[in-house]
Every structure is written in C-alpha cells, then in structure tokens.
Image (cartoon, rainbow, N blue to C red; front, top):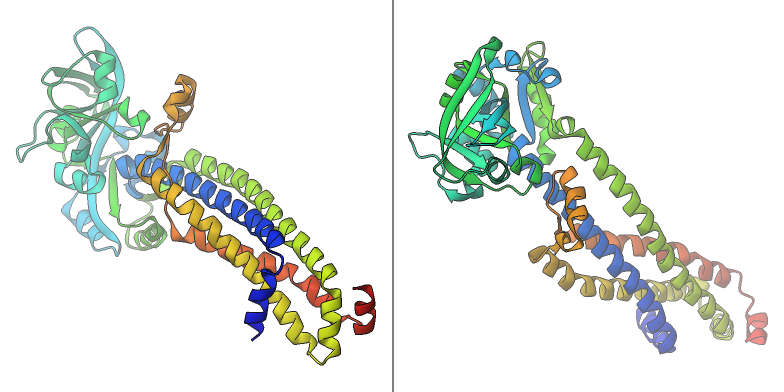
Length: 409
C-alpha cells in the first residue's frame, strides 16, 4: 500500500517529476558515458602495450631490468621452464633474447629492438601472427625476420627484401646479420611499430652469440587480477638472489602513473555530476515538503503513523532516483555499444593529437568499454545520494505538529 501511494504521489506533479528525472538521467548518462570512454581507452592502451609485448609478468636475471644488457641474460633450461609452468595461473612461458641494434636498408638506417622468440610460445602469448599485414608468420622451419611497418617505412624496404642488423652481442662480440623479410607487422601501439624486429630464437642466439640464453621470460597469464598471486608463488619457488619477477605495473610505471592521474581528473568531474544530481533531487524534496505540509498534517491527524508517512516519502524519493538512473543508463547503453564497435578516431584532430597519443604508446582512438559494473555503480551511488537526502523530509515529519502544519498549508 505504501509503495502504491508513493507511486501515485510522484505523478501528482508531473512537471516537477519530469524535471527531476531529466536532471538525474543527464548526470547518470554523462557519468556512464565518460567512465566507459576513459576505462575503454586505458584498457585498450594496456592491451596494446602489455599483451602485445611485455606480458603481465616477466622473469629475468637479477639486475637485468636496471641495465637491460645481454651480459645480464639468464640460462634457459628445461628445469626452469617446468618450474614456471607448474606455477598456478601460468599458462605458457615465452623466452626472449632481445637487444638494440642498427637496422639498415639500401640507403637508410634506424635503431630497432631485435627480439628473438620461440614462434609457437610467442604467438600464444601475444598473438603475433594476427598482426601480420603482409607476408606470413614463421612456418615450422623458422627463418627470416618479421619487421614492424614503421621500421619498414623508415628504411624504405618492402616484403622480400633483406634487412641488415648490426649490434653488439653477448660479452662484447660483434653481431652482424642479413635476414630476408618474410612478414610485416602492424601493432596497435605506434611505439612498437617504430622499433620492433623479430627473429626466430635460434637465429637470434647465433646472431648475438648467446646460445641457450634468454634476457626475459614473458609469462602468459589469463587475467591481470591473477598477477599478484603468481608473483607471490614465484618469489617462494625461485631463488630471488638470481631471478627477478616483475609485474606489468613495475615494467611500465609511467603508464600506471598516467592512468592514475587521468582517473583522478575523471573523479573530480564525476563529483560535479553527482552534485548536480544531489541539488536536483534536494530541490524537489524542499518543494514537495513545503507544498505538502497540509497533507502531512491531515494524515498524521487522522492517525497515520509518522514512520509510515516517512517511508512513503522515502519511497517517492527513491523512485525518482531509480527512474532517472534507468533512463540515463538506457540513453547511454546504445551510444557506448556503438563506440565500442566504432571507436572515436582522434586523428581527424590533426598530427598534434596523434603525436600526443603516440608519446604514451597508444593509437589515437577512444574505444568505449561496455562494462556492467559501470552502470551498476551509477545505481548504487544514486541510491546512496537519495537515501541521505531523504533524511530531511523524514526529520521534518518526525517533528511535525499536525495543527500547525494544516494552518500553514
């Protein structure tokens, strides 16, 4: 009965109700849309940088991360591989032998990162074959180089040409090699596009003079939420004086800091939106409480309990917040879904915008994240706001003097 009364009451003044619903719906719509874009852009960036290269965790020789030198490479043994694969949460281990080199074409040179990989393990971890735009991924008898499209453009080469790599190998040996380009890669990260050259691990070992060695062991972990648990296990099973276990947050701290800074700015805007909701609902509450003082006086005068009247008014306020939230979510859902399938392309804003995003190693696009948790928390926050604001009419009703209220009405 109280719910029926509350439902009828909110439609007694349709104009006021629609104004309140519009203010709540607008704020929920904007908050949901903004969070979906912000989280979608950062998730896309993490996928580009983490899943396309680093992996969510790596095992290295102690001291390698500070110097990143071939001289700090570790010995890759079947025993170490089995120990890693027996760790709960680790699906696959992708050993890499990597170092910087000078890549030369016919007339031009550029600095690159040469990465020797095990074709099958690397493809399982980073889906490297899916980034082939021309040529092919390595067959069973791996041979030749996979080169990122940005490197190809810089040195003016095409598929089928041979790339010359010059570097310094293990313990200072000269490293020089000529490799046919069998595939061209294109990554979502502009930074990777400009510097990546992949070789089969056996060829990389011969090139660097580092037989049976690896600089990093990238771990294939299904979800980033499992990373802390995997790191804790490895810290107990591996000799930490010889090995270092790094999570993705330690390997790319600049990206983590940028994400936290962006999230802080986003939270400030959300606070403003929630204040809009609060003032909109509270304005309705003030008008409702004032206009209905005669009604409240009559109801309490004829014997209605104050707690029943308070619950009825609370239900009215909650219904306003709930209907506004549902309207805002229904407005946001189609737009978020569309932008998930068709991300906003910021390249239309000019080269300056593209260069800004490239500094963070991401494509100049803004995909939306369709995450039910985003919309769920909008409902929770509005529920909290309306519950707090409903204390005002409850206080007024608890202190109501029926005769005085009827005179004022």
